[in-house]
Image 1 (cartoon, rainbow, N blue to C red):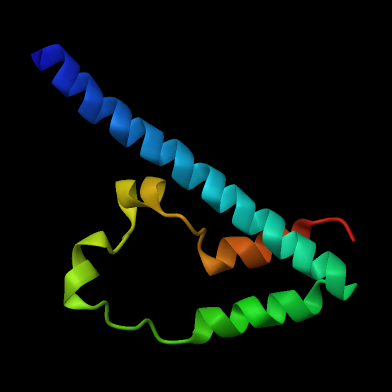
Image 2 (image 1 turned 45 degrees about the horizontal axis):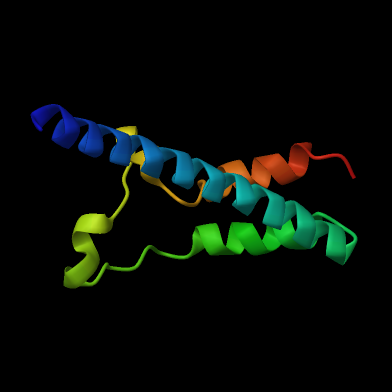
Length: 94
């Protein structure tokens, strides 16, 4: 019974990491798709840069514990950093 409980916890974390990875991957594909629909990458890169320049808002107290920070928390982040998204667009083929 203890083994089952431990495996439930460990595999639950592993599953969340996989789900977050797929979510980050979808964000990169969405950025590329948006740039493709616009016909140029630059407008999408400008939009992302503007989002990156906005000051981070204060999280409400009810969800403060869910704030993702650096380190191992990046594995659970559902969105890649803005800088990585812009770099991926710059390196993508036209």
